[in-house]
Image (cartoon, rainbow, N blue to C red; front, side, top):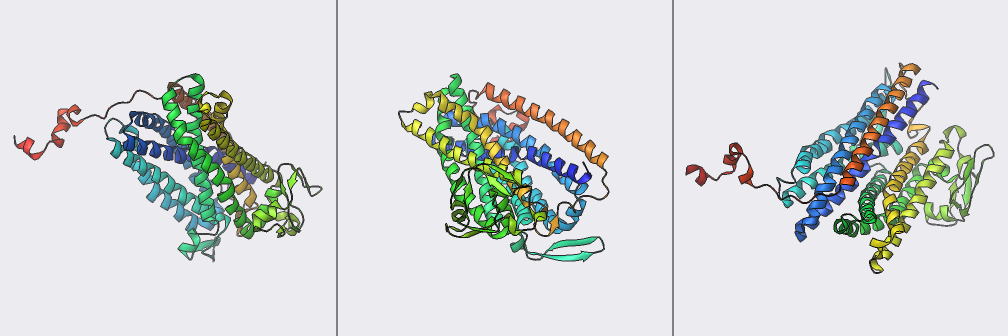
Length: 467
């Protein structure tokens, strides 16, 4: 393998591992806000007990996300120096904004959220939690903004320099609100909320199967199941459909690869449910729904859709992995709708959900399946953009750092694989340990009188001090 392929593998591996955690933190953060609101409104201690339990999981996920996310910042400069120079004026400013405006907000209130359960009242703790969760979503906004510019670049001008051509931001509004930004942001947020609700459902269903924490598990399912069901429908029929329209207009090569569509132009284009792409014979085998692709792309069953043969083969993305990742994502998306509907039916059918083991096991598996679907969607977006690292402006092959050697990249790849394997084992161990332990009895917030004398005087009124 040469330097380019090793650098591609390294970045794909590290970013895929990192992408396990941000969706959990955003989705679980939303559930924490919901639990906090329910606790403030009902004053039922079980919601605070659930919040304290899940906040520990959030802290673990947050730590893993930070540890694995910083790596990408260094890889941009070390492995992809040409790319970093080309997009630095745009991409660099967006990443800097993410750190200044979002990460500092999230990190600033994280300590209050993690350690304030016995020191802050319900409202103040809810405020701290909401600010942390808002910071996580605000961070995702800047990251999606930067990635969307790579997918559908706009608001830039090209300038020649002694070190090569670079992209300069010409119009901030056009650069950040690229044609794909809002659709991508909606799709990412909904998928993250789906993962978070699935995590709560998974642990709660497991507790019911094991006969533990029945009251808390039942309450958690009542709060998370409606969200999971609604989001699964929105993800497929709203945000997914929106992205299909964007790709039709701006990335037709990616759309053709995702669907395995070969003719240069095909009216009433079919949607392949699953199958195999054969590049040598230029065919795609598998069952298909006639005209559905034309309808999804143009809302017209007779509309012609552009296929792969309309483009030079050098501009095709990796067909098999793009096709399979996309269809895995779609299949799992439909499965989530089925899980949500079936679970809802069993819930309203004499509350049988809480004692029907096979449905509970579906909910247990849901968190793993949502993570797979999220990764499949990420792979579809990134592999489908190839051979471009910035669509129609800069190829991935020409973006590698010229000074790298194969031995250097190979060593870093091996190091990352070993380190991330250790981190994954540690994460699973700590996550399993916390879930096995389960929610602990609630603790009352500490009063000022319980503080040491040194600090108690700070909270005394002027009248008390005068005495």
